[in-house]
Length: 173
Image (cartoon, one colour):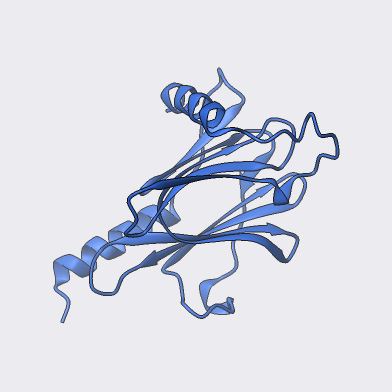
């Protein structure tokens, strides 16, 4: 049987995740969303939180403990599901990148991550570490792109992503 302290810590984490809001800075065009083990930096005028589908209405095999939805002005969505191990307070995320109702890219068992939106379109770059893995991975998720021009649609390299993310993460609250 789980202790009350364990259950309280789990519930506190879930409530913190559900209440997270974008932190904006007037000196940049970016905003930051800070969730446990993750930082998300997106363009202020292009991305916003939306009312997510109730968890009991989702058709998933494993029920997440909490869910966070982000949408951009072009209708692309990112759904971040908080998953928790039953025997510990370890968390991981399942992240769906959606175009309309279609999931076009999916990451699962993500223990920690940093996400950054591209300037010109819906494209997202993410550096992440999977649960129980030592090495980080980097991906530029082009599946959400709304751009047809290859110049605008140019992917981030890991170095460019890391440099830009580090600068913005330092400047944003």
